[in-house]
Length: 162
Length: 127
Image (cartoon, rainbow over all chains, first blue to last red):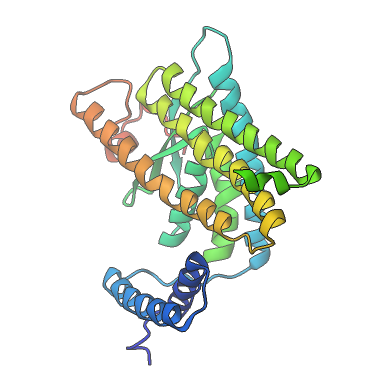
């Protein structure tokens, strides 16, 4: 069973996604979707992803709340930086952040969060030194990015993934 | 576009507001690419489009077609999820290639590789 269906949850999700995109539950689409989702999960075997074990749905909800709020706030902040008439250019800077996350999936999710939030861009993560290089558009507001990443995001991500 | 006539007024107002504000944010992102000075600052401008712009326009589409066709409104959710998952890939590629070029040219404004930065006491890495 494990051999034929190495990632049963992934296969089911892919099948559901296929049927949603095609907006049909006809037998032909179900057959095509099943073939695609099972063969694609074989492709995943070669990629050898670490299987995430998700815990604490409450922490995930809180994280989603933080992210939505931060995206809204930083959208307004970056809009201000783009449209302001002042001649002084924005004080952008590179910021080094030390990560404590171990799980690859958690780091990938953190990358999505930091990138989707306008005003921070994920540039480089070094696995050996665990140092993350981000570029911050406006450092004039004096935010401490190390503590924001550690206390706001990493704490919840570790609750969810580790 | 004639089917939009069927949209009731109570739904048309939020749809228009969301669509216009989403488009305005996307336009602002495009203006930002022109107005910002350095490459790394310009990296931030398109994230306005991929976060705020996409979220607002997808929400307006959800309301419009949820009201008009009474259908499941999951396509927009899928669009938002794929936007969030795929944006970091291109952004990191662009950022890392710029970093690589600037380091090769020994641009002093760009931080060096982290191994050297960590052993160099002159660079404050905030640990």
